[in-house]
Length: 117
Image (cartoon, rainbow, N blue to C red):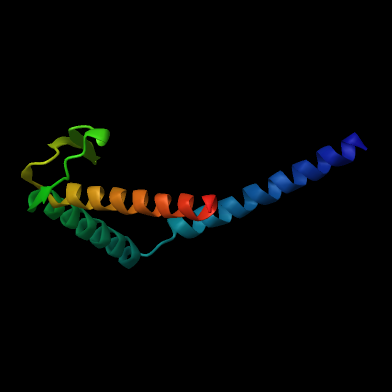
């Protein structure tokens, strides 16, 4: 019985390896046009990311002693500390991170409120 399970496991493993090998062959056989398209998409994304770091936007975070007097934000290895209650200009990428964090906090509060009612 144990030998049968070992054989079944070996067959399943061999089937998985064969499927993976076929997929690798498919990927390696990609056309030059597909490769160029992927490179163009990468370049476009990288350019957009750089623009978000260069373009600056004014922000003012509400002063709230319960949340501390500053906010730390990090994007792609770059970090900034933003003082609450003061208008400052920050890269647009950080503004997006702050907005996303705020939206997530609000959604979490709504979910907690619904579940506790």
